[in-house]
Image (cartoon, rainbow, N blue to C red; front, side, top):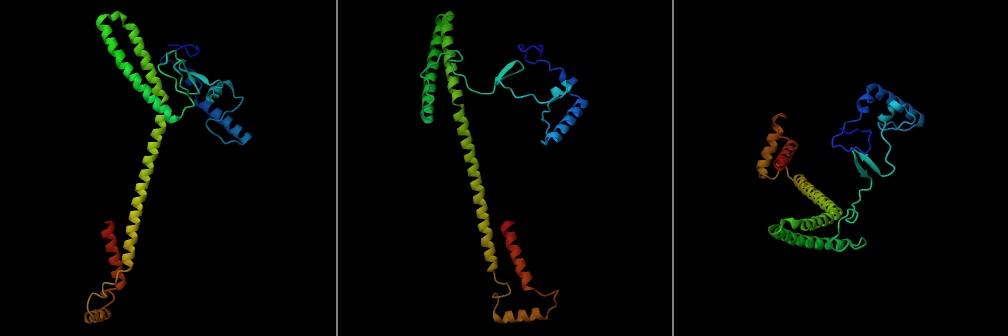
Length: 257
C-alpha cells in the first residue's frame, strides 16, 4: 500500500490515515465541543458542528474542518481536482481537431445546428475508415496502425462534440421537466375547479329543494297529513327540518359515495 505521507503516491485503495482512530476519540470530541461553546459565547456566533476555533491544540486540529483550497486544486487519493470544472479543448488534450472550430460568440441555435452537422460528418467518416480498416486487415494486417489512429482521432472528436453539447442537453431536460410539472399542476387545478363547480351546483339545488311534505299530494291529503302530524306525539311525529336534513345527507352520499 502507498503511504499517505507521500504526495506523489497513487494507489487505488490507500490505507486510511492513522489519526482517524487515534485522535477521533470521545475525549477529543468533548474537548473540541467545549472549545466551540466557549468560542461561540465570546464571539456571539451561532454554534455549529463545523465551527472553526482558532488556536486549538495540535491534538484537536484534525477534528476541525479543513480550510477551502486557495489555489483551486487539491489532491484526493492521488488524483488532482480543480474547482473550475471546465471542459478541456482537443488542442489541450493533444488531439487533432477534425472540422472547423465552432466560434464561441456564435448564436446558440446556429452552434447546435453546426454540431449536428459535424457529428453526421464524423459518423460517415467513421464508417468509411472502418471499411478501409477491414480492407487493410484483409491484405496487410501490419499496416493497420495508422488507420486505427485515424479511428481513434474520429472517436475523440465525436466525444468532444457530445461533451460540448452537455449544457444544452441539461437545459432542455430542465425545460421538459418544468413543462411536465406545469402541465400536472394545471390538470390538478382543473380537476379541483370541476369538483368545486359540481359541489356548488349541488348546494344550489339543495337550497332550492322543496320540503317533501309540500306539493307532493293534493290539498285534501296535505290537510289530513298536517292534522295527523299535529295530533301525533313528538317522538313519532315527522319533523320537516329533520326530513330536509335527511334529503341533503342522502344527496351528498349519492354524489360523493
